[in-house]
Amino acid sequence: MQLAAQQTVPADGGNSTRIDAAWLKQLALEHGADDAGLVEIGHPGLDDQRADILKFYPRTQALLAIVCRMNREPIRNPARSVANLEFHTTGDVVNDVCRAVVSVLERAGVPAINSPMGFPMESHRWPDKMWVVSHKPVAVAAGLGLMGIHRNVIHPKFGNFILLGTVLIGAEVTEYDRPIDYNPCLSCKLCVAACPVGAISPDGTFDLASCYTHNYREFMGGFGDWVEQVADAKSGLDLRKKVTRQETVSTWQSLAFGPNYKAAYCLSVCPAGEEVIGPFQTDRKGFLKEIVKPLQDKEETIYVVPKSDAEDFVKKRFPHKRVKQVRGSLLPSTISGFLNGMRYTFQRGQSAGLNAIYHFTFTGKEPQTATVVIRDQTIHVVEGHEGTADLHLTADSETWLGFLAKERSLLWALLRRKIRIQGSPRLLVAFGRCFPT
Ligand code: B12
Ligand code: SF4
Image (cartoon, rainbow, N blue to C red):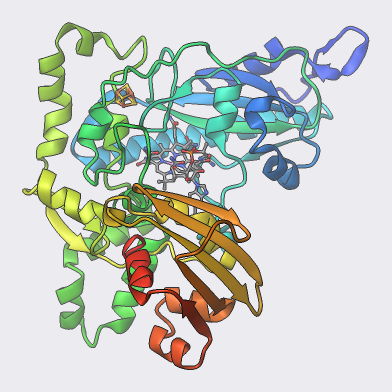
């Protein structure tokens, strides 16, 4: 869309630094957004995001959140090439809208910046938080919807068939929006029933590692694993024993056309949203048969880390799907990444029966202490030492990270006292079971 080069920013009367809210939202709609909302940087909904946002763009005073609709039928079809085309095409629209808004603002003398819808990200930070702005909390604070059980934002009208974008603006706006006051999520749990790896629990907890290992097989870590398989193979024939030709073609496709998600079934089956809910309300059985069942019945390869909750789940719940064991790739590169990341890679099922307090003392390059409490299939991580430890582990930080990455052996580290434990070694083994790689 052509930008209005001479466009000026309407201000509210005397205060020329405040941008007219209605004009700004209309600008986003005119450039292709389907809805837009505004939130101030001080809003309590952004409390846990503010520091990161301001670090990325210290001028931020107001945030423009936008949504772009995806077409439902392609997203729901078991042919995931078609769903992926819809994800990528809508993602491009989100980026184009945000960029166009920034261009208009910049030409009018207002500093603003658009952060990517998805990729590219700050990959040097991987596997820690590598995205610069978390669009979901911004969209929620700006009144564009609420997160459902599956942790995607559900727009009251368009449901979860939306992608999100954010423009950070270095000026104030005349009026801000507020979060919606009801949750469009119906608690129907179709997302729980459709997810091929059991990543979504009925209680709303989310197994990030399982989703990431399967759905993101051809992104970041999964791609890294494919490269390592190629490097490790003695010949082309040897490689085919580990990676099928179809998988290599799929990897090529992801590199050539944009990485392909393997599932996203949680999004596909969600019936919430005014414009979406009709068929589910009138014929629930028919909806299940037409939308949910084809995805559940689909014969496909599901990628799992050996001895993970997902492996147990697929074998039990979807025995007709092929399980393929792959290496876990969410391996931390720093001690703080290890401590923060544990809650995302923790496997509840594998922790069954374990109730213990672990004290960690890291020495060397990244000195740090932490307490990890595993109890009743939950994990709690805090800085410092709290309570009485059942197991105390002291480790040189680099040796510990090397051990997690399978670059150093535990026996070697124990013999050289680079890693020391006080307490039963069985508790260390049980701890390891909660984080299969
Ligand atoms: C990281 C990420 C993921 C992660 C974590 C998902 C999650 N629940 O947050 C993974 C890889 C699993 C993922 C999967 C998907 N994602 Co995603 N993802 C993102 C990203 C980059 C940031 C998410 C975020 O900020 N969360 C913030 C908080 C509020 O979410 P949360 O659920 O409370 O907490 C999670 C995060 O904090 C995360 N986290 C925190 N620290 C770290 C560190 C690491 C290393 C990792 C990996 C995660 C992580 O783990 C928490 C537990 O879930 C955004 C793009 C962006 N820049 O915002 C897209 C985004 C959230 N994803 C999106 C989509 C569509 C998907 C998929 C459907 C992918 C697909 N097309 O197949 C699935 C759905 C999975 C699901 N049910 O959540 C859309 C959601 C649209 C909507 N309607 O809400 C977004 C907003 C992209 C966009 N611009 O529209 N995604
Ligand atoms: S599928 Fe049902 S339970 Fe899951 S998010 Fe959508 S409305 Fe909520």
